[in-house]
Image (cartoon, helix red, strand yellow):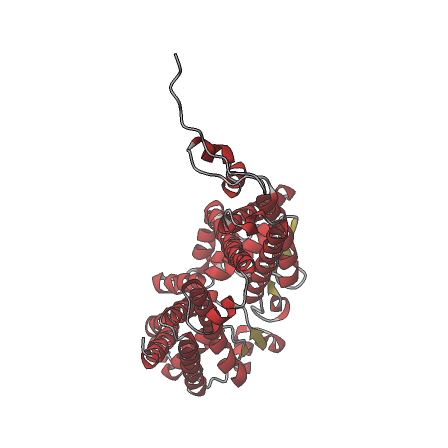
Length: 435
């Protein structure tokens, strides 16, 4: 494909990802402005508010500074009127990342992934600059360099990863192929197997988090409904609240993964929500937060077996990728795959935990979400146990595939090389009996 066409398609992908993200924030806020505020609505604040929501979703911290008159009216202390909001609604960043991954993958299959990734990153940077310059807001402010750098990175990093994965799988007649030519087949097999195992491990971490959130929503559905009713909002307000909670659903899923792994998460300074125990203070009356259990039992530590099982599946997938090659029979190769799965899976969980944590308000709410270090350590240990079992346990079917039985070939009449210096064994034709 022509490089100019690749660049144009990547630019369109980046522009569409940004426009859809801003529109997803603008649409519900516009409904709120029309139906809830009516004639008193300040339409000049709608666009800056929408841009700030999008920027927060792209991991940009927002400083909230509420007016003093408003604080005095509602009775909030002046000290609590200024705070940072950095707990991101990861649905926005997730949409951008998926779009970027597809963009980079398509550019790699077209044979011009550096051009595609660069074009997408440049367009994202320009869009982020335009949004920043047109959204001055005295109540919600951002640092300029963060407003430019973070959205660009949210697009560029997944686009680059998607391009490299696609180029590794399909070839690019360029940098990736040149790198593969310098790698011997054994190491190439190890890298491919480890990449497959890491992908399974990270996807499994997210999957068990989603499963836990779904189960908690079913078990504590009555509390969720009670908080909706206690809010005394009309249909418009309930819809706006529901949309906001959906934007934070990926964040809750990562919290669930951290809970299953063992370390859990915090909802405020000095709090902890984990299988080993829960210490919670006052929790805001947001319906989605009703899924957080007020107390736990040590029996929930058995949930860590799910992460160990994920490690086993990741190890089994990596071993299948190695197949019956020399790498599969090499203990050193399997150990290398095991180390890469553990390190890569733990790093992926740590990155997700860092993205799902931050400040959600003033005071004690400045520390919300899982801690990346403990989550990485717990996930790494659990993946180590499960993947080691899958990679190093004897598998009869796989061993037979890697080491064929000479007797089977003798019975079929094919030649099988014997030990050095001996003639190959050949099955003798059947002779009729002599009377």
